[in-house]
Length: 211
Image 1 (cartoon, rainbow, N blue to C red):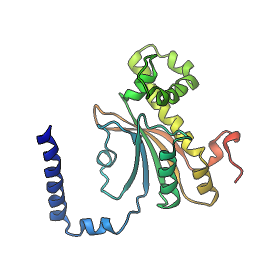
Image 2 (cartoon, rainbow, N blue to C red):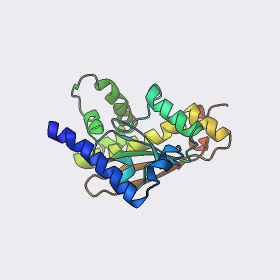
Image 3 (cartoon, helix red, strand yellow):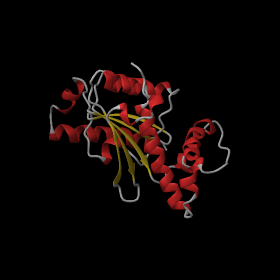
Image 4 (cartoon, rainbow, N blue to C red):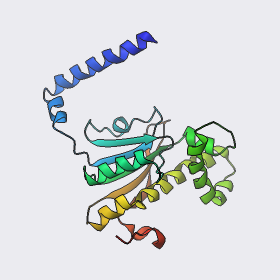
């Protein structure tokens, strides 16, 4: 374990050297500040590194990650990231990226007790409740699991759009698009869920805030 820890620091030095060889001003530019066009809300799963899977350089993606890429309106960490990304960084795209094989989503398909995380998983179970007829009609368990992952992403896209942060940005004329993706760990490809929200017209009227 100590050797592995030391290797991480050595890897950092090699990474610095590699970037400076390609571009001597690489870190000087990063030190000047950030203006990423994208906010990525993804899963904490270690197999889904936001920048790497879309070929983005440091400074191009503002990232928030949690278990099962959830957008929970009482989560001050997520709201703070969203507020900063939208109102300070002026990102143009918010991407909700889930992934097939997500452990959080899989846990929500069971009645197992996991401890403190049960309180988080309950929000994922709510997504199942919203779509239980479609999901229960899928006989193959793996296909049902995959579809649950997809539907969870779709619901989180709508949940971002429901926030006063995003709706205020739209009201002020800010160009902001919210997208839903699912990453496949098995082949590294992204499944675009073909859902993009760019104003609150697509939301049920009760969610359209009078700002």
